[in-house]
Amino acid sequence: MRSLKAGVRYFAVVFGAGFMLGPIRILWVAPRLGTRMGELLEAPIMLVITIVAAPQIVRRLAVPLTPSSRLGMGGIALGLMLIAEFTVVFWLRGLSIREYLAGRDPVAATVYYVMLGVFGVMPLLVARR
Image (cartoon, rainbow, N blue to C red):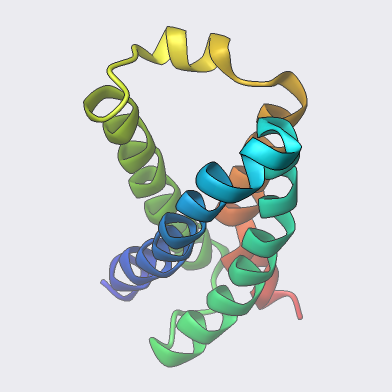
C-alpha cells in the first residue's frame, strides 16, 4: 500500500512540474529555439525534479528498502505518467499513438524515453545511496 501511495504522489509531483514547464517550453522557448531545443532544455530540469522528489517521497512515506517496493513505486508512477501522456495526446491533440510517435523529433524523443526510464527506476536508485 505504501508503494501505491508513494507512486501516485511521485507521479503527481513530477507530472505537476512538467505540466507547469510545458507551457513555458511551448509558448516561449520553442518559438525562439525550436521544438527540439525546447525539449532538450526541459529534460535536465525534469531530471533534477525527479532526483529531488524520489528520495523525499520515499522517506516521507517510509517505502520499504526492498527492490520490489521501490520498483513498484516507480512502476506505478511510470504507468500513471504514460496514461496521462497518452490521454493528453488523444484528447487535446487528437492524435493516435502512432501519429504521436512518428511526429516526435528523434533526438528529443530518445532523451524523453531515457528520462521515463530514469523516472521509473529512481526510487530504486535512491535505495542504493
